[in-house]
Length: 255
Image (cartoon, rainbow, N blue to C red; front, top):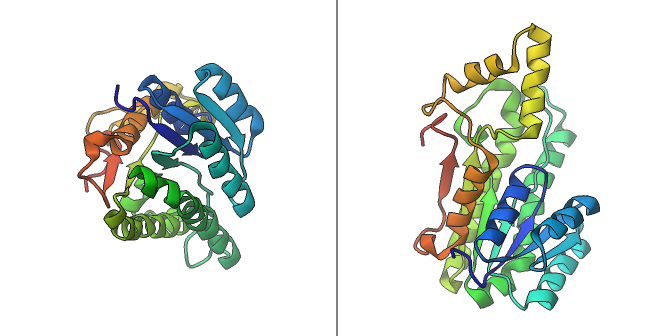
């Protein structure tokens, strides 16, 4: 199996991609450490996965809590082979020229500083295992649509951080890569499409088809498909890959 005997920490487990990454990692033989602010989310998922899952309710904005997460993982499993950072904060959806700067700053803190803190605290364990980091970024990197300015600013900084960490940690045998998903066809997006459909008085499928019409594969990626790309970068199959950003968007953008 792809991750047999490995220990994967998933920081930012939600109902979509984070959960898919954890489940797929476990299916590929890994022990998984699940971190999220919502205790019920990680505890329920740990029950679903079984004995090789550890739920650690964690506020990733709290350094003490993140230290405790890393310590719990090491106490339970003795090592960390991969860290998947999937947590994010949505900045204001306004143009950069008009967005409140305190909100922009909060977006940078929630997306960049939170990731940097978690990676730094996990680094000693990752050096010991010669492990890998996968940072979940966003396809917002690939466009400059007006309402997304603060979000693109945060995600571009996050990519820069990941690339610099790849250079800094590479001599220690630690790889750092990113994935940039676009739309992910999960419950949250289904709900949004259903809302748009109700507003327009059309079937939800029409909204899906309109969005998919501009995507090469004429469909939206599902959580498991994005998770598989994450696991590729976390595994030894990508042992010569670091500093990369893999787009997982069914061809919505080319890079």
